[in-house]
Length: 262
Image 1: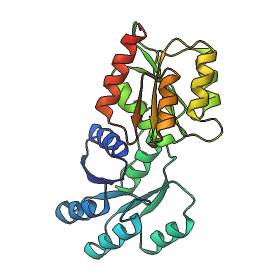
Image 2: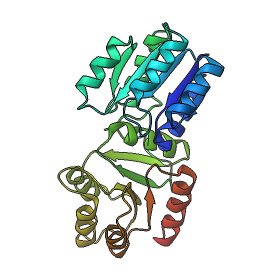
Image 3: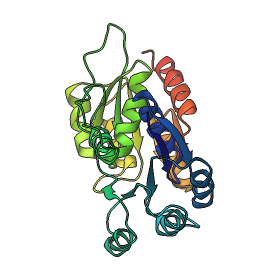
Image 4: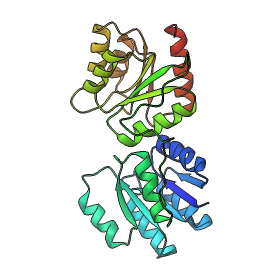
């Protein structure tokens, strides 16, 4: 068992990575800010730290510098959304163990972590990937389509909801989601509002035009009142802010399934 510190300003990422790593036998600490991360590192000396590069107030580079001052040999894996080559180069100069893209699927992330820990990466069929569906459902099991352009968010929400007994399918953009709904309508869609190409509002409009009978839970990091109102007017069950409160998401899905008679 390894002690892992997960540092990300998105609580959703922390919660779901914690759940995944705990199920693989690890002890997990989480921090949503740099100062909290440094305090936890100082106290617990984790075997490996997963560190978000971009965070408000104190970014990953500043946290890495403090970690290196405490323990020059500590294993630190930097997570980046891309488009920050200069910062990634700086992290490498500071001796970061590895730099991984946030678009990495959960099985690949766990494989990379196993390599850092010096263990072989076994096959993990229990972990859904960004473009896979879970096994065929038992009778009466609700199907949920998760639509988000970030692979890690898709995978983590898929893992969380799969563990709650739902059948999960995923789509990385609006066009793919609409095609999947046309092919096999899910009982519920968990839909990111901000995606390149076709945003969530347009997906909602097209679902409405196609007379989609299931429910939709919208996810957004925006506080735009006009967007929130339009999303509700287009028939979404609820609008949840990012980072997502996972307990509330599960409750909203349950309520939505009742409202739509599923």
